[in-house]
Length: 470
Ligand code: ASP
Ligand code: MG
Image 1 (cartoon, helix red, strand yellow):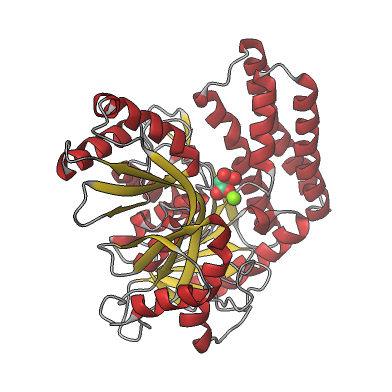
Image 2 (cartoon, rainbow, N blue to C red):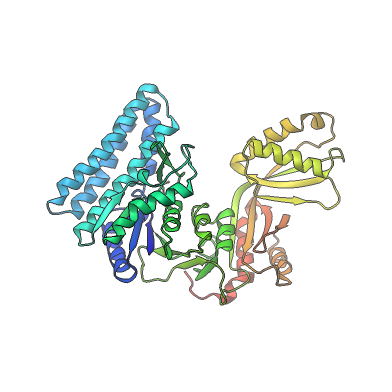
């Protein structure tokens, strides 16, 4: 069993749908049974979001304009894809789905409110329309297919806007809904991003969640592989905007891919890998527009897996917060209270470093969370701050740069070479972390040094072995 996921750009217009059909046809010939998971057509989720926001703000003109855009985008694709009698039928189905959204917008306009629950229902129309279009197109082209709204089989909690899946129930429901289809040779075309609570109320998995949906489907069906079709040839060794010599990677381990997405690389939605780990289902990242290229394989390390540095990534702007105590509170208490305060206010911590003798340490948080973090710490340590036991919390906006690759800890000299490379480029290192993870050496540099740092590290470790350049 093969699960294939197509992102928004892969189904951007009629021409793209045709390309997807070719890929699915080949998949069915070689790897049947195939299950397809699809995102909304590109720009659609954004347009839906904007109309809902405008509706709640009472801006009817924008709502009307966006609705017109959405209608035309889908109807144009339908016109091009279905010359025959199916056109009418597909157009009606899509219009009915969009009409639901129109009603929701009217409700939001009336209430002048944007309830998350209604928002999820509204956003669901994007994937429902694209799944309908794709299933009908495949079926029309001789590949029996059927659209599946995952409100019927992806069971989640009721955290609207970013609902965690309930895996046991989902597995049961997906097998019940999807396996009878694949058994009779029909390709299920499953909506990405969407789910529903036990009570059947629509939810979404969070923006960009279709990758995650796909890995949930793959895990639920015990698929052999998951192929994620996107608009690039695979995962790159660095951002090509910073490094001209960046190259596509043949393979990555789950751990490396997780480190990369944690450190800012746009590899996969960050929750995607978790469902695959139990059965070690490998994921391939492939290019819809160049399907003959092999892509990048992400999976468990195997005997022939290349070890050592593989990719350089960076995250910016991020904020470095420095806490310095004069001894009271001591390090342990300082840590405990800091983490508690940040966890209460749900601030993600990207990196922590500690001076070895002083009661001081730095932590790195996303810049968007920096103010919240500062406020939480100011509140937690208000007494210590007012008595100067704690120096005022410093904040510096910086860039984090990381070298990723499994097995680096077993290779002496890597850190030395890394800092040597930065030194030669006159990049000053503000903080360093080689965490408990063996596969990530991170450092913090000034914002303006970001690109130079990435380039220097890439040059030192990756370029010599360059194979498939971009
Ligand atoms: N359509 C959704 C979004 O844009 C989900 C996805 O594309 O993965 O966030
Ligand atoms: Mg998308």
